[in-house]
Image (cartoon, rainbow, N blue to C red; front, side, top):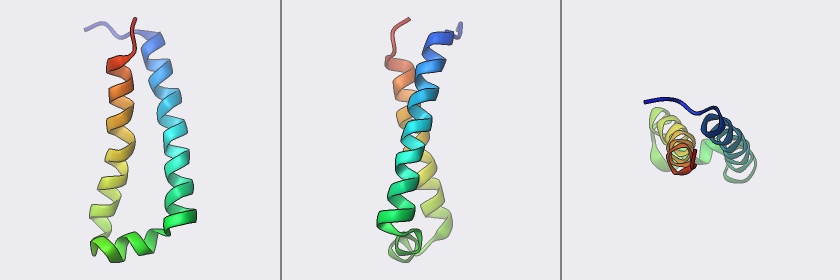
Length: 66
């Protein structure tokens, strides 16, 4: 599988923007400790937040045309 610089660039831009939006949402609006109390696991919240950044970024990479 050959990596395309254009696909990597677009998915990286999307990943960074999506990460910033999630940081603002989690730290400002939802409050991280509230999420930890709701899910009752710090590790679970961290994994969910990482997946919320990684999976859409991979989807953008796969969908982007060459």
